[in-house]
Image (cartoon, rainbow, N blue to C red; front, side, top):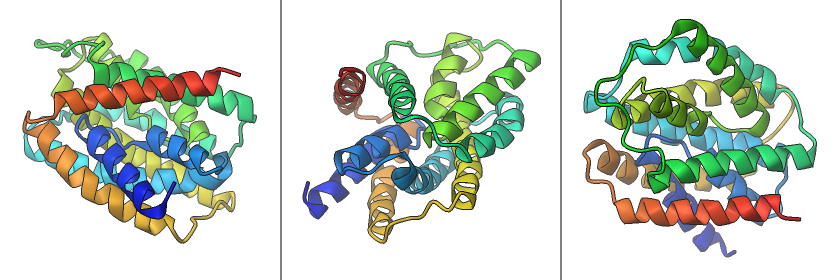
Length: 242
């Protein structure tokens, strides 16, 4: 893949993920795999791009009034330390690919609309369950090298704890704090960022600005989300097939 095409790919992934409040790390990891980069080579760059994209997405969704602190904090409380813990570990390559495939599958389901629009009259968050789920999502996210929004967003919708827009806003900040914790852990392990990754981040920021605005203002390009969902499904199949 040429450098110019790669930058376009990072921008496109960021645009489409940001439109639903996600950071795009699972997509960046797939692009890294296509470049021949392994888990420890791509985890820190993916987390840093997540910081950029999720920060932009959160700012836009928060500005549009979709964020709910009462939904966010129970998950974040336990996920942040567990994301740090997970990022200090290295998985067996096969286990890593399986977990990434699950993450891609959930992201695809979210983009394809399989999970529905979310609750109109959301139920209150059940604190003990939220704390437990936050810890699990944080640990798995840190292990893979993602922010965890693709796990949290479906959970919020399936448990009817938020609308789709609130799930996007909450997931964006959740991704931001977990990515920061994961990046610290990965850095402590000695993982580094290649020079070209700074260009990837710039491309992702451009894509995120467009995607977050369209998603928060309900002008999201639904057909593009469906295309990305299909691509993620194919990427998932590629990971799980021998």
